[in-house]
Length: 532
Image (cartoon, rainbow, N blue to C red):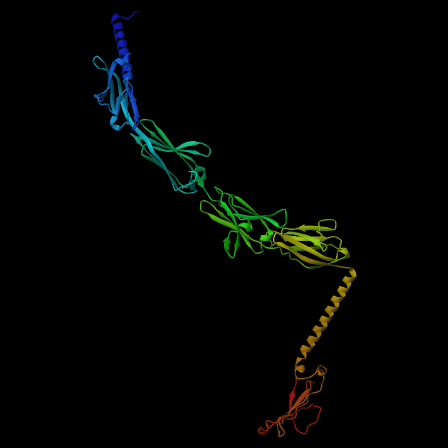
């Protein structure tokens, strides 16, 4: 079935119109171009659709419809010039050079001008003056920034671009993973990290791109996060191969970067560095070791390790040197055939002493069938002697030594037989018996203390006779008489006291006193005193 004639004509017309439009668009694309030049630089604009014999043509360029420059002018311009092939060269491009440029040509015989090119010129500038600011941060000698752990850090990037720009912050962490932190189209871009952590350290990059020229400038800055060790420094020691050599060890771990450690001696509460004496060194490390010889050490001296971290934290550890001093029982006894243990304790020395048991021939005692040498957690060193004999009697030495010197404790072992033991029992019995007799005598004396006090001897404590005491005051007497006392009913002795009073005129003469017992007769009555 065929189409009507009129319809075919309409379809042909539409196709022809589309072809004409397509040809026109292609032609315009060929003559209409965009050129972007950088401010301050030299830019060239090319003429298109030039005839084969270009040397026979004369060229000129219009800017925004106005002739700006002609080839081979009478007054050449330093800013605008036309080459032999018709290209326009613009030196020191400025913003005022933006516009619509047309390239025209004509034959040298003066034919009409023909348009060869139509170019839109745009002028762009930047990015320039790209700068980074990270606060608070410290710049290291190698150009790296470091910030302190847990601080609030602000990152700022700025640049200049014409007509506009895009800014982007990108972070490349330690795992080499890259991600954007912020972006914007202003003259600066800022973001912050609160309480920055070690995981946030890495390479921070600010990218600035001109929106017109697509020119891109990047600036990179490595940022490290420093943190001091949370724990305190630790001081320790090790005894070297020789007993008199010691290794001082100072470690302060857990910080980044590693701290600076120094060994010092402390004298009179002042910290001083003793380079040649203690081989004092300063080193950035988590562990600092110093070899020291005993001849430069003194008991009671304090040794200190001081740690400095770049974040400003300073801490130290120390210990006081002390010679060994073993203590224990210096006298030990044992029976023949029994087992006996000698012991000493040495726990005060620093560095810790090496302690052994020795005999008087300076021979070190080791564990064997005869001896068992051991040490417990309290630094008590024991020597157990199996099946003691008389030959084991003698002096044993608890020998302690550290780099400061040596000390020894003498322990004398006395070995006794069973007969010696019986004699000891008898001696104890006799001692107890003597003590009991003394206690009995003391009790008796105490119960008769009243008679002892008036001058009676021990021989008369049980005498039934009474005593009469006569006190004479002078030759001329005043006698005080009392009535005759009845016989005592309690069976105790009765003492009669005769008191003679001396006249006042003869008080300077010596007095006579006469003591009479109640078994003597007296012509005058006397005052009777009864002793209970």
